[in-house]
Image (cartoon, rainbow, N blue to C red; front, top):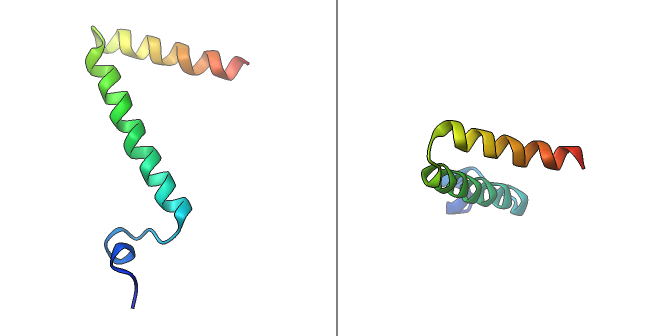
Length: 57
């Protein structure tokens, strides 16, 4: 019989738990950033700039 956590989530490794936590936190932070922006266009422009700036280095 599987652990109750595994039965409800389907996650059975520490790596799986870490990835799930990462996506929850990332979604929370991106949503907060979007809410603070003056418009969706402004948010997308700033977000793209941050991502492409890191890819260049």
